[in-house]
Amino acid sequence: MIYNPDFDVDSVLEILRTVDEKYQEGSPEDEAIRVAAVALFYVREIQKLDDYREFFRKFYTPAVDYIVPSRTFATREDADEWLMSGKAGEGDLVKIAGEGFRVIPRRDAKGLRFRPTPLPEELMKMNPPDSE
Image (tube, rainbow, N blue to C red):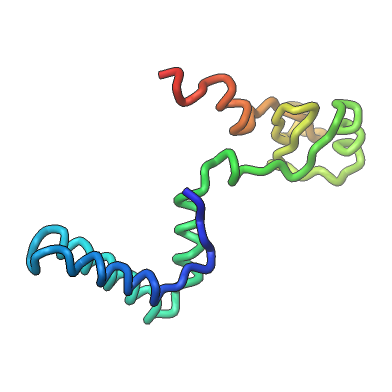
C-alpha cells in the first residue's frame, strides 16, 4: 500500500459518508463506517492528527522500507576504520558489503565490534514470501 502522508481528512470523511449511503442504517457495515469516521474526526478534534499520520505510516510501511542502516560501507576495512574512529555508537545498524551488522560491545568490554544482523532485504532473500 502506498501511503499518502498528506491525506485530506475532510476528503476521507466525505468518502466514508458516500460509501455509508450504500448500506442500510443500523447494518454492521453502517456501524463500522460510522465508527471509523468518528474515530478519525476525534483524532482531529483532540489535535493528534500528526501522531495518527505517523502511526498510520509505521503501520503500513514494510520493515524492508522502515529499517534503514545508519551507515553503508563498501568493504569491511572501511567499516572497521569507522568503528575504530570512535564515531560508532552501540546499537548502530550498518551495511557492510551488502550485509547487515549491529554495533555491540566487545566481550571484554573494551570497545565495540560488529555482530551480523540480517537486514530485512537479506531476510526476504532467505525466506521469500512465496516460499511457505
